[in-house]
Image (cartoon, rainbow, N blue to C red):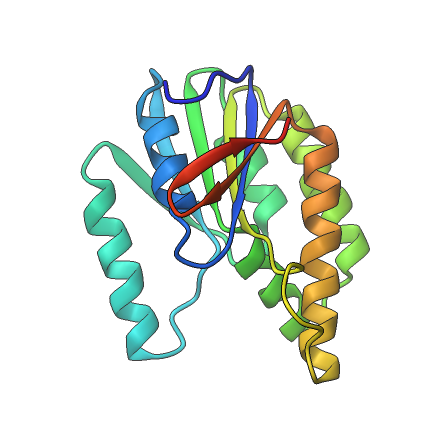
Length: 173
C-alpha cells in the first residue's frame, strides 16, 4: 500500500495530476473485490475514447458500475466488507448534478451518509478546482462552488486525504 489509511480515502488533485492513477494503485494494493464507480458520461467521441482507455488500464480484476447521478445508491448497493470501492470522480458527479439542476444539498447529504455507512473500503477521487482564477460565467462559478462544497463535505467525514500534484502525493489528513 502506498498510503496507509483505515477505511476511507479522498484523493484530490488538478487535471492530469496523477490522482486517478494513485487512487487505483491504492485500491489494487488491497485485498478484496474491486469495484469502480464511474460518474463520467460519454457525450462525445473524445469522452468515449477516454472512458475506454480508463477501462483498459484497470484490467480484468475490476468491475465497473456507472453512476452519473445516483452515486449514494451505488455506494450503498455495492459496498461490502470484502469490497474496495473506487469512486472516480466526484467532480464529474458535481457537473452532472449542476447540469441537471438537481438538489445539490440533498445529493451531498446522501453521498456523505453512504460513505460513512459503507461497510468496506472506499476511495474517492476529485478535482480541486478552486485554486485557479474566478470563472467568468455563472454556470462555471456554480460548478466551482458545488465541487468545493462536495470536497469539503467528503473531506470532513473520511479517514484520510491525499493531494496529488505532478504524480506526487501530499498527505492532508
